[in-house]
Image (cartoon, rainbow, N blue to C red; front, side):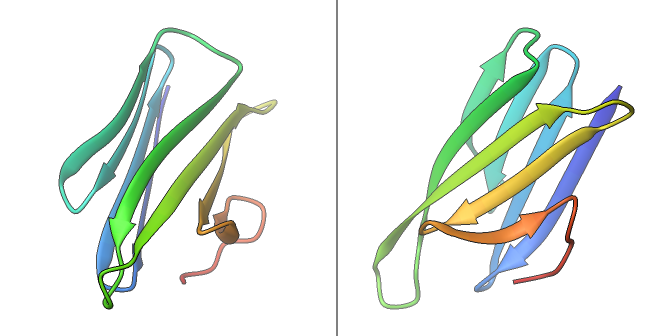
Length: 89
C-alpha cells in the first residue's frame, strides 16, 4: 500500500508519502520528517518560509482507515488539506 498527497501552498510544494512501513514529509524537494515503521497513526512535522521571511510550522496527521489512509495537513495551525474535504490552499 502506497499513498501520496501533493499540494502547493504559497508557492511551496508539499508532498506526503505513506507506505506500510514509512511516512515522509517533503517541502520543496527537501525531506523534513521521516517516520519509519508500521503505525496506525503518525504525525510528521516541518517548516516553510513565508514570503515575508516568517517561518510557518507544518503538521501532518496520518491515520489508517478501513480501506485507505487519511491525511490532514495543517500550516500555522490552519487546516489546508484533508482527504475528507479536499481543496487546494
